[in-house]
Length: 293
Image 1: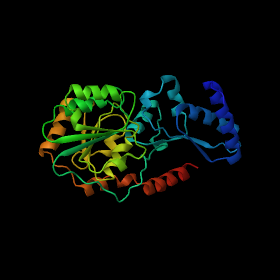
Image 2: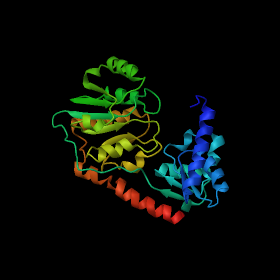
Image 3: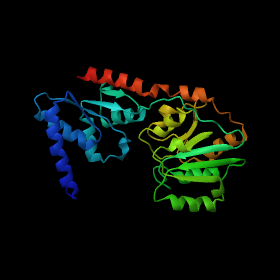
């Protein structure tokens, strides 16, 4: 295999062309802007002329302006959040009928985690980015202002881990934090949880929120683009706060610890995300794809 990036892309393009001609599909779903462009070119060369649909799993704001027109050129779009749907409209997708809101699926199981009775147990699951997309430094800074009995379990890893540990030590809260490291199945390592916290600058959807809620865990998240506002509904299953607003975040955390903010029931939290269940997703997706053929 060639180590040259362009050569690898060309190799992939050739092998994909062979597969497309073999299977002769009715629809091609493309997961990024370059794949959409390539799929549109291939569609014109095929006898069946399959439709090309976009299925982007990240905020469109991260795409270079030069490539954004490729996305708008797709025949239809699967939006995993209402935020991405709005971004597609801003890109020039004039017909809302071409945009299908599908969300992201998760298998809703029967397991619900217990809540600790004495101390509040916060949880963070994800990459440990200090001051980038995940803004984990915000979480540590806000927790340093929280009084009372609490602890934080962090499941995740990255090159910023040591910097975050140094921050926690400087804030004098490191003794309250369990650094669990990266786990392939993080929920197997969390026995009890009060609230999951997400402090991101942006998300593609925020699947970790649905994963937590499916286990009865309410969530606090930044109201970032895109996804959390589709998942979290204040007081029903958690709370949203403005990105980077550490005062609001620390107030929320304090109120949970001191008991002045009552957590919604585990059953209520779980029921709030049942619309994301895999079975519902598959049925909805089948209907959409059949309507596009």
